[in-house]
Amino acid sequence: MIDPWLEALDQANHHLHQQGLIRQLKLRSSPNGPFVDINGSQLLSFSSNDYLGLSNHPLLKKAMAEGADIYGTGSGASALISGHSTAHHLLENRLAQTQSLHIPNVATCFINTGFMANMAMITALASLGNISIYSDTLNHASIIDGIRMAKVQSQAQVFVYPHNDVETLQALLTQDPCPHKLIVTDSVFSMDGDFAPIQQLVKIAEQHQALLFLDDAHGFGIFGKNGHGCLEHFDICSPNIIYMGTLGKAVGVSGAFIAAQKFWIEWLIQKSRPIIYSTSPSPAIAHTALKSIELIKSEEGLNKRMHLFNLISYWNQRSNFTPWHVLPSSSAIQALIIGTNNKVMEVSKSLHHSGIWVPAIRPPTVPEHTARLRITLNADHSFAHIDLLVDALSKIESNLG
Image 1 (tube, rainbow, N blue to C red):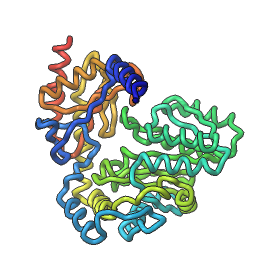
Image 2 (image 1 turned 180 degrees about the vertical axis):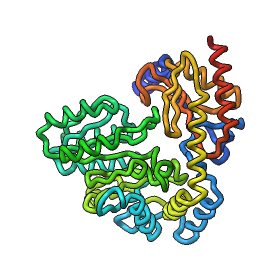
Image 3 (image 1 turned 135 degrees about the vertical axis):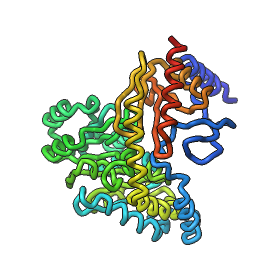
C-alpha cells in the first residue's frame, strides 16, 4: 500500500491549485511557425524560442535527412566511448570559429542541452576545489541547479548578488580571500529579456582574476554582425570568459556548446558527468546545426535578424498598457507583467479565446507577484501579427477594468 504517498501527493496538488500554480502540457501537432495547432486549435503563437523561424526551414529539414543518411540517427554511445563522430567534430570546429575573436586559444564541446551544459561546466570547475561562485539573482534554473550541485560536490561558497548590480558584486569580490572565483550570469535574461552588463563584468573578472561564465542561450544566433552572439555584439575579448550557447533556440535545432580556452574544454571532458555518462547527441543534429550556423551568417540570415529587430522596435512602440507593466527589451523576449497568478492565467486564457497563444509564466520561474506573459517574437512574424496581439490585449485590458 502507498497511501502515505498518495495523501502527500493530494495535499501538494491541492496547495498548487490554491496558489494558481498547476501546469498542464499542451499538444502541438504542427511545426513551429507564426500559426501553430495547439490542442486542435490553430493559434497565432508568441510562445516559441525559435527566434529566426529556422526549425522548419527547408534547408535544415534537408540537412537533417542528409545527416541521418550519412551518420545514422543516433550516436550509439557517450562521446568518450564511441559516440563522437565526424559530424560532432566538424560542428565543434565551426562553433570555435564563431568565438575565436573573443576567447584566445578557443575550443568547444557540443552537449545535449543547455541545461546539461551549464551543470557540466560549473561542476567541472568546482571539482578543482576551494571555489567561490557569484550568481545573478535572476539567473536561469539550469545555472542555479549547476551551482547547487557544485555546492554539494565541493562545498563551494555561493554568493547571490542583486540583478545586474555590479557595485555589490565588486564589493563581495573585494572581500573574498578565496583564490578561485567564478561569476555566472545569463547574457540575455530568459524572463525579462534584458542584457547583463557584460563589458563591466569582464573588467571585474579580470581585476579579480575571476572566471566569467556567460550563458548566451538567448543571444547566440541573433546578436552580432554574423549572429555569433553577445561577445560579437559587444566586441569583447578576454581569456577569463567561458561561454555557453544553445542550438535549440535561434539556431532552430537542439543541443548546446561550451566555448573556452582549450585547457578548460579538456578539463570539462575529464570531469563532466553529463558528458562522460550521457549518450552523445545525434550526429544528424550536429550535421544540421552546422548548416544552420552557415545559414544564419548568410544574406538570408542577416535579413531574418534585421526583420526580427524591426519587429522588436515595433512592439516597443505599440505596447502601452495600464496597469500592466511592459519590460522594455531589445531582445526577442518581451515580458508583460500582469501581477497575480490567477490574473495572468485569466489574460492568457482570454488571448487563447481570441486565437492567440502566449504562455503565462508564474513563480518559481519568476519572483512572487511578477507573474507575466512572456511574449517571444520571431522572424516569421509580421507587423500585422503584432497589431493583432496589441489589439487583443487592449480589448482584454478594457474588459477587465
